[in-house]
Length: 72
Image (cartoon, rainbow, N blue to C red; front, side, top):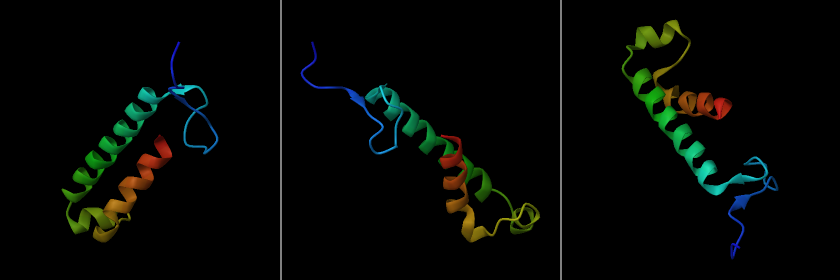
């Protein structure tokens, strides 16, 4: 018998009801890692290449976060 509940509920809408805290943390870490990798890949492109795909160099960080947020 646990002394406290290790699941986080859907009260805030940030997790699936009944999902374990460890699973939630793992998914958040994976989302952060994906955003980091996306940002790194985009920063490796030239301004001309970024313009071809419709991204301004100053928008890279926000774009990487939005992509990650929509996936996780």
